[in-house]
Length: 203
Image 1 (cartoon, one colour):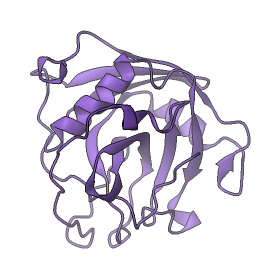
Image 2 (tube, one colour):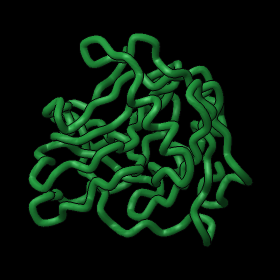
Image 3 (cartoon, one colour):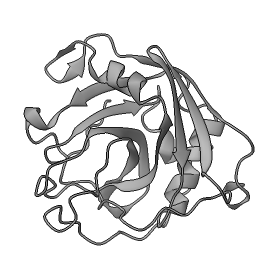
Image 4 (spheres, helix red, strand yellow):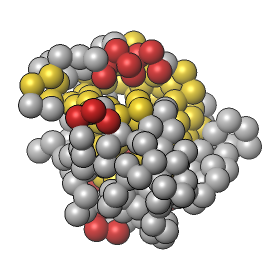
């Protein structure tokens, strides 16, 4: 079942600085989609366990055959994440996280965009964390930052950002939709690590 990020079940946006897992630009992941290639850099900051879980999903092929299933903009109003633009994706098996051990990243403190208007920047990649537990495999990429005060009660764990391919993200976001969902969901054909799994994430 498709999971949208409802405000009642998500954990708070991680706001700590992004420290690289591999000493440079982070661990890079390619997403080969029906609209083109996206490269993301995973730099976990205060959420290393969540970042490792995402990378393990990639290494296990959990996103291969998945899809981007919705897009929202600030003009569409509260989308479960306050007023912001995003595309949301998932693998073909939405409950894949249930097969992995729970992660233990602490909940980050509440974020006020009135005080910190640049927290939700374009290109950011984040996961949901259900009821303070393990993150889901569904992820979002921010297409338009929320305006100051636009973030109310949503909760996310930031694990990285797009390093190449925002034009592809924008093409995905512009796909035809009905009732908030893509008519023909842009596929994720495959997701791959560029390089080795970081030592901190090896089982």
